[in-house]
Length: 212
Image 1 (cartoon, rainbow, N blue to C red):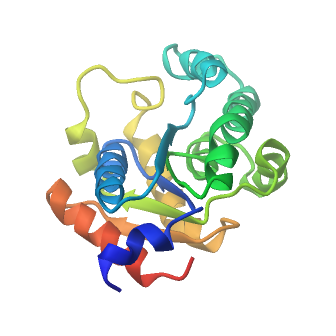
Image 2: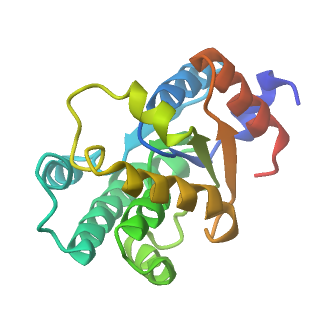
């Protein structure tokens, strides 16, 4: 597919980037946003948790404090509450206008992170449906990188999720790699090694190739 047609193909689509901390997903969200904007697409960017005034308050609670005493169920419900507001305030209105929505993490992150923390993953589908209704991503792109490489990219100041032990991040990565077989929407794993430009080319090629 000619990538010049990518903007039209992705019109009205909800695309999520996810993956282990340090994998480069945020960079890829920004690069795809710029690429699609140059092609004439109307692009809305979002982040999870956060992306709205209410969601940013929830993000502060989740990522700016030590979560060792927070029950994993409380943690999971707070993430879902932020998503409910994000979908209502940002995602659904943008899709209704034919825009492309790019989101930095979504429910896929709860499968991986809260699943790695002990939440029963089989219960997440019903909980996700309660939070976002039928507004699930048209495609989720997991930017994958070995934990040792990913952690080496992180800055010294880590948030509450990033600062968890390496064993936790290994479990997170394992779930992300298994996500295509358990997630309710399409998931594609993209190799996050190499330069940002190299990864971006892989993302664009994959989006041009897959059926959405």
